[in-house]
Length: 228
Ligand SMILES: *Cc1c(COP(=O)(O)O)cnc(C)c1O
Image 1 (cartoon, protein in one colour):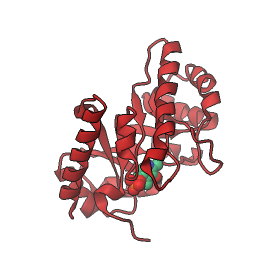
Image 2 (tube, rainbow, N blue to C red; image 1 turned 180 degrees about the horizontal axis):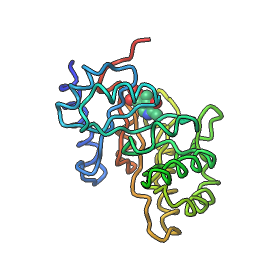
Image 3 (tube, rainbow, N blue to C red; image 1 turned 90 degrees about the vertical axis):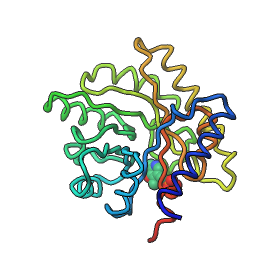
Image 4 (cartoon, protein in one colour; image 1 turned 135 degrees about the vertical axis):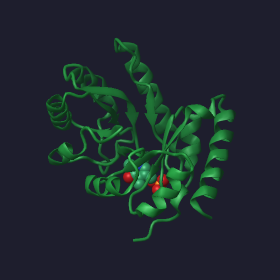
C-alpha cells in the first residue's frame, strides 16, 4: 500500500470513529510523523494535502525542512533539550512536548528575543509511567498558572502518549483523562485556551478520536513499519 492509499484508509477510519462518537471528522487534524522517513516519501504526503509534519528530533527536522517545500508546517513532538530550543523557536507550527519549567523559560527567552509568541502544548504523563516525559496530572494546574507569566508562550492544549498495549481499547482511560484535565483547566483559565488535544497514534487513534482528540500523530499508519 502506498502513502496515498494508507491515508484514504486512515481517513475513513477516522470518519467512522468520529461519527460513532457524534463528532465532526473535519475537526480532526492529522500530523504525519516523519521520523526515519525520507524527504521523497514525505513529499507524497504533502501531495495528498496534509501539510502538518511531526518530528521528534530537532536535527532530523531541520535537515528535512531544507529539502521540502516551505508550505510544510513542522511540529516538534519529541523530548526537547534546552540547548536545541534555538533551532525550533520560530520554525515550528507547534511544540507538543513542553514538559518542564526550565524548557518553558528557554522557549520564552528565545521567543522574546525574536519578538514572537510560540504556540505549545503541555505534554502530560497521564499514565504515570517512569519512562515517559511529561507533567503529572496533579501538577498541571500549577504549571499552567506559572506559564501565565511567560508572555511569549501560548499554551493551546495538551498532549499525551498512551502506554503501548495490545488492545487499543485499554488506552481509553488515559485519553479520557486528558480530555477531562483540559476541561477542568479551561474552567480556571481566563481565556479557556486549551483547545487542542494531541493524542492518538497508529495503534490507538480511533479510541483517541472517540475521546475527543483533534490532533492525531500518525507515523506507521501512513508510512508503514519503520526499519531499524
Ligand atoms: C513516533 C511517534 C508517533 C507516531 O507513532 P506511530 O505509532 O508510528 O504512529 C507519535 N508521537 C510521538 C511522540 C512519536 O514519537
